[in-house]
Structure formats: C-alpha cells, structure tokens
Length: 119
Image (cartoon, rainbow, N blue to C red; front, side, top):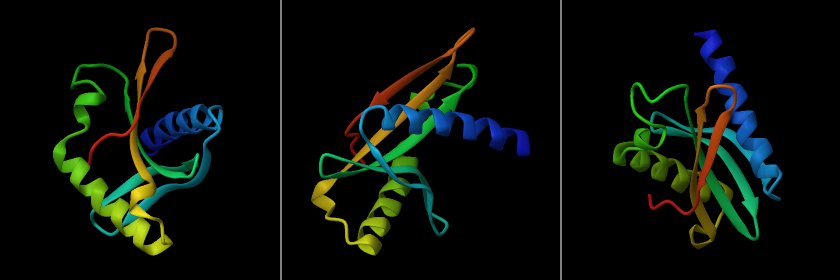
C-alpha cells in the first residue's frame, strides 16, 4: 500500500509543477470533506479558484484515466467543492473544476489538462 502512495505522490507533484509552470498558485492539496471525497489540488489563477482532480494510469488495461471520471465521482467532488467554498468564503461564481490525467508511456508520460469540467 505504501508504494502506491509514493507512486501517486510523484504524479501529484508532476501536476503541481505543470500548473505552477503556467502561473497557477497552489492553495491546498488533498482537501478532504468527510466521507464524500477529496480534491487533489486547489489552485488560483486569474481571480479563479481552480479545483483539480488528478488521475494517473500506468496502462489502459482497466480503462483510461479519462474514463475513471464518473458521474458519481463528479457528484462527490461537487459536494467537496461546495464545502470548501462555504468554509473559505469563496464565491461559487469564481471557481472552475479541472481534470489532469497522467498516463505512463514507454519511457515517459503523457499529461492532459481538461479545463472547466461540468460537475
């Protein structure tokens, strides 16, 4: 179990570096809301608070990273986003929900950034 977490940390750090390289300020990581869900990254850019779900896949054997973003997962993310906004007095009109997928390639990885996902 521990090795999986370390592997995940590498991809989360990869996503953070990607966002920082595009002028995002990281506000929080792994923000939890009770039993509902966890938001992987919370960032700020251009007056928006951006909530980011990071999905990693070492292969497509069990589906792509994109396919792992289900309506049920999005609903749980929405509850967590609502809680974060209420707790931190963030205007719900000034938020965005993004997904970053990281897929292992033969000798590297492929990162995709999907912006403004409807939750």
